[in-house]
Length: 623
Image (tube, rainbow, N blue to C red; front, side, top):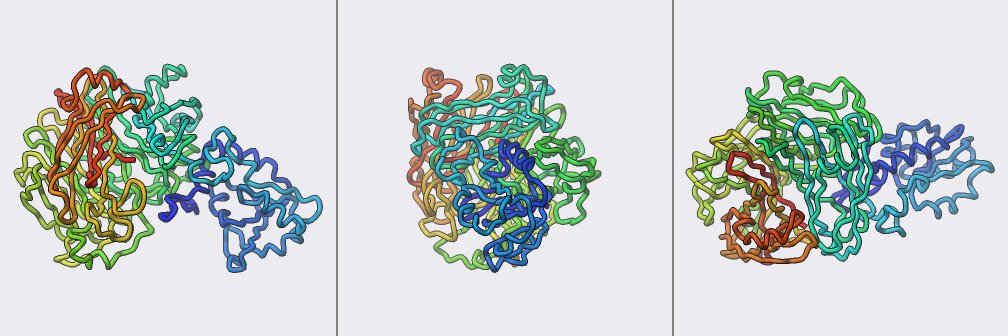
């Protein structure tokens, strides 16, 4: 496993990791390492030696620290020595593992022997033109980055869609620095894209990129770096996968989580008539060693390893059946990657229809929380995981709880089911599920034509909880056989009382009691839609005060429509019925709908749908 810290819940992310992982930083560090001469000493003032030497191995002979409590620690395979010994270490070169290191160099200069070459990570900085905050290199806004699975091959194409939401926080000029890698990790193209000056929409289409750069068919990953941002250091997007000539294959996935994890979960085993392929994409400039990546039936603890190396920034297709033959839905699979990749995608092929979805980060830093079973009455039902029941006359809706942290040995949960008007139609205690369970619940049994359901904790048979409750939601068109799936986790919704960091807010501290959700428009062939759910842990406003705000490609608000959703209810909304054709034409191909509500926190799922049996669906994102 890479010895890197990739996420800090207090800061929203580990900036030094993102600074080291940037593709341009990788190139600059390679040039820096070429200057290491003779015996090399490393001074590690900020405790990043593990990450630096894991991501960029180098021959280092000694390591020094100034914190007396760190003396004797093992970092990067070396025993930390006191900084006061650096003058007699005999090294020819000193590498200081820090950015903005001018003051550090000045502070220790008198301690160094004459002739010692001093290098710092400032020699591996990104170009000034790519920095948003130039006075502080490790400002998180300098590393608003993410990856996207990107393909234009075999009749399948990808289209990344989002909006310049940074403009709402005061950003004046935002642009994207983009780099496309192929299957082998080779660079296919590097370019920039300027975003609208206001909160306008934008897209990046693989067909356009392929034509622009004269590329052959490709499958790989797109690295995205947003420059000039404000307010948000997260790059959020929706990614459509669609077929040439408007073929049957269609899917939508939410943005990738930009933080590598040791484990991921929520990968379904194939049905006998399906092929499930995991797209493993190396997020770093260091190869993934053979025997690092593995698939395992959830809870079995019998991992089957990938026996080949994966090159820097390379992409590998892993057919689940090659690793776990005979394992079928509703069994589920755990992925181990040793922190080499961000949230991967998987692809399901069934009857010549292809759909793509994402796995989720399996947390290894959580512990059982005894406070959750003891939540006071003011928190109502506490953590809720809402998901749609699509119109039953056309769709089958299925839910599968998915363990999503290493401490989840059991899942004590109940299923609550609601009509669209918020009437509770039933509940089912699912039990205190074991980690290796293979339960999948078909919502047909509840007789709800359209509405939503919620997974909640239920401790009637004991069990424990950590707040990281997740599930996979699968939807199947009864006539065409087309399917879509999404997965997400629980939150506390719509209560003025707070527990830890819940109810979450889009900006500022909890409680989060308002809504800003992004809904793309149709693609000219299929209509876009969203299922908006008003989940409530306790009693809240009887009805929402929701508006659908239609924006054009420049981000100008050109139309509004109102939607009232009952508490614990839901609504299926369609931009093409909420707004007339003239307004939608004025919005253009880069236009979008912003779902706003100042009175409650909605949760939503969005996608595209046609009348021929194709549709896509994933959870929405907000900003």
